Image (cartoon, rainbow, N blue to C red; front, side):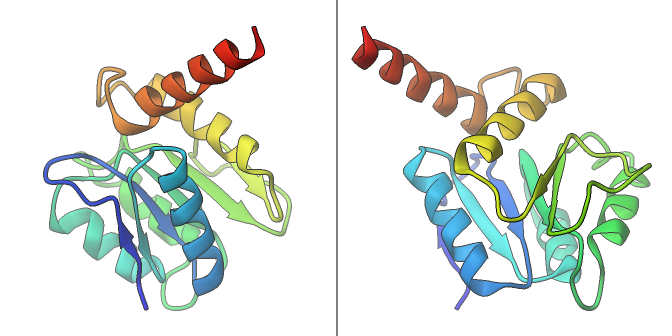
Length: 152
Protein backbone atom coordinates (compact mmCIF):
# COMPACT_ATOMS: atom_id res chain seq x y z
CA UNK A 1 0.00 0.00 0.00
CA UNK A 2 1.46 3.36 -1.03
CA UNK A 3 0.59 6.25 1.24
CA UNK A 4 -0.45 9.53 -0.28
CA UNK A 5 -1.02 11.84 2.67
CA UNK A 6 -1.51 15.56 2.90
CA UNK A 7 -2.14 15.89 -0.83
CA UNK A 8 -3.38 19.36 -1.64
CA UNK A 9 -3.76 20.73 -5.12
CA UNK A 10 -0.80 22.78 -6.21
CA UNK A 11 1.14 22.43 -2.97
CA UNK A 12 4.64 21.10 -3.38
CA UNK A 13 5.50 18.21 -1.13
CA UNK A 14 8.45 16.18 0.07
CA UNK A 15 8.89 12.95 -1.88
CA UNK A 16 10.06 10.07 0.34
CA UNK A 17 11.80 7.39 -1.74
CA UNK A 18 12.71 4.07 -0.14
CA UNK A 19 12.12 0.43 -1.01
CA UNK A 20 11.28 -0.29 2.67
CA UNK A 21 7.51 0.18 2.84
CA UNK A 22 7.45 0.48 6.63
CA UNK A 23 10.13 3.17 6.72
CA UNK A 24 8.38 5.11 3.93
CA UNK A 25 5.16 5.01 5.89
CA UNK A 26 6.81 6.17 9.12
CA UNK A 27 8.57 9.06 7.37
CA UNK A 28 5.48 10.22 5.47
CA UNK A 29 3.47 10.09 8.68
CA UNK A 30 6.16 11.90 10.71
CA UNK A 31 6.39 14.64 8.10
CA UNK A 32 2.61 14.97 8.08
CA UNK A 33 2.53 15.28 11.87
CA UNK A 34 5.12 18.07 11.51
CA UNK A 35 2.80 19.87 9.09
CA UNK A 36 4.79 18.96 5.98
CA UNK A 37 2.98 17.43 3.03
CA UNK A 38 4.63 14.22 1.84
CA UNK A 39 4.11 11.49 -0.72
CA UNK A 40 6.11 8.35 -1.31
CA UNK A 41 7.76 6.33 -4.05
CA UNK A 42 8.90 2.72 -3.71
CA UNK A 43 12.06 2.96 -5.82
CA UNK A 44 14.03 5.19 -8.16
CA UNK A 45 11.92 4.48 -11.23
CA UNK A 46 8.71 5.29 -9.34
CA UNK A 47 10.34 8.46 -7.97
CA UNK A 48 11.35 9.79 -11.38
CA UNK A 49 7.91 9.02 -12.81
CA UNK A 50 6.28 11.02 -10.00
CA UNK A 51 8.75 13.90 -10.25
CA UNK A 52 8.13 14.22 -13.99
CA UNK A 53 4.36 13.67 -13.85
CA UNK A 54 3.33 16.88 -12.12
CA UNK A 55 4.55 19.68 -9.92
CA UNK A 56 8.06 18.78 -8.78
CA UNK A 57 8.47 18.01 -5.08
CA UNK A 58 9.99 20.64 -2.83
CA UNK A 59 12.61 18.07 -1.75
CA UNK A 60 13.48 14.37 -1.96
CA UNK A 61 14.40 12.11 0.94
CA UNK A 62 16.15 9.44 -1.09
CA UNK A 63 17.41 6.01 -0.14
CA UNK A 64 20.57 5.14 -2.03
CA UNK A 65 20.27 1.34 -2.09
CA UNK A 66 17.15 0.39 -4.06
CA UNK A 67 16.24 -2.07 -6.81
CA UNK A 68 15.64 -1.06 -10.45
CA UNK A 69 17.23 2.40 -10.12
CA UNK A 70 19.52 3.39 -7.26
CA UNK A 71 19.52 6.69 -5.44
CA UNK A 72 22.83 7.53 -7.15
CA UNK A 73 21.10 7.09 -10.53
CA UNK A 74 18.12 9.22 -9.45
CA UNK A 75 20.43 12.07 -8.41
CA UNK A 76 22.28 11.83 -11.74
CA UNK A 77 18.97 11.99 -13.65
CA UNK A 78 17.75 15.00 -11.66
CA UNK A 79 21.03 16.90 -11.95
CA UNK A 80 21.12 16.21 -15.69
CA UNK A 81 17.65 17.67 -16.26
CA UNK A 82 17.69 21.47 -16.25
CA UNK A 83 14.06 21.68 -15.10
CA UNK A 84 14.68 19.37 -12.11
CA UNK A 85 18.31 20.04 -11.23
CA UNK A 86 17.58 22.46 -8.37
CA UNK A 87 15.33 20.11 -6.39
CA UNK A 88 17.01 19.54 -3.01
CA UNK A 89 17.95 15.91 -2.38
CA UNK A 90 18.80 14.43 1.00
CA UNK A 91 20.14 10.91 0.84
CA UNK A 92 19.53 8.13 3.36
CA UNK A 93 21.39 4.87 3.86
CA UNK A 94 22.91 2.77 6.61
CA UNK A 95 26.33 3.35 5.04
CA UNK A 96 28.56 6.41 5.27
CA UNK A 97 27.72 9.57 3.37
CA UNK A 98 28.49 9.18 -0.33
CA UNK A 99 31.37 11.17 -1.75
CA UNK A 100 30.93 13.36 -4.82
CA UNK A 101 27.15 13.11 -4.96
CA UNK A 102 25.45 16.49 -5.47
CA UNK A 103 23.01 16.49 -2.56
CA UNK A 104 21.96 18.78 0.27
CA UNK A 105 22.84 16.31 3.01
CA UNK A 106 22.89 12.73 4.16
CA UNK A 107 21.09 10.85 6.92
CA UNK A 108 22.71 7.70 8.28
CA UNK A 109 20.00 5.17 9.16
CA UNK A 110 18.69 5.05 11.81
CA UNK A 111 18.30 8.80 12.29
CA UNK A 112 16.36 11.14 14.55
CA UNK A 113 13.34 12.99 13.22
CA UNK A 114 14.88 16.31 14.32
CA UNK A 115 17.97 15.59 12.17
CA UNK A 116 15.77 14.96 9.14
CA UNK A 117 13.72 18.11 9.73
CA UNK A 118 16.89 20.17 10.21
CA UNK A 119 18.36 18.98 6.91
CA UNK A 120 15.07 19.56 5.09
CA UNK A 121 14.84 23.05 6.52
CA UNK A 122 18.39 23.98 5.44
CA UNK A 123 17.93 22.42 1.99
CA UNK A 124 14.68 24.25 1.38
CA UNK A 125 16.05 27.56 2.65
CA UNK A 126 18.93 27.46 0.16
CA UNK A 127 16.96 26.14 -2.81
CA UNK A 128 14.72 29.23 -3.20
CA UNK A 129 12.26 27.51 -5.55
CA UNK A 130 9.45 28.34 -3.10
CA UNK A 131 10.87 31.69 -1.93
CA UNK A 132 10.68 30.44 1.66
CA UNK A 133 6.92 30.01 1.54
CA UNK A 134 6.94 26.30 0.78
CA UNK A 135 5.55 23.58 3.02
CA UNK A 136 8.84 22.68 4.70
CA UNK A 137 10.18 26.10 5.64
CA UNK A 138 6.79 27.50 6.62
CA UNK A 139 5.77 24.53 8.76
CA UNK A 140 9.14 24.19 10.47
CA UNK A 141 9.21 27.90 11.27
CA UNK A 142 5.71 27.59 12.76
CA UNK A 143 6.63 24.49 14.78
CA UNK A 144 9.80 26.05 16.12
CA UNK A 145 7.99 29.28 17.06
CA UNK A 146 5.34 27.25 18.92
CA UNK A 147 8.03 25.24 20.75
CA UNK A 148 9.88 28.43 21.70
CA UNK A 149 6.68 29.94 23.08
CA UNK A 150 6.06 26.86 25.22
CA UNK A 151 9.58 27.03 26.66
CA UNK A 152 9.24 30.70 27.69
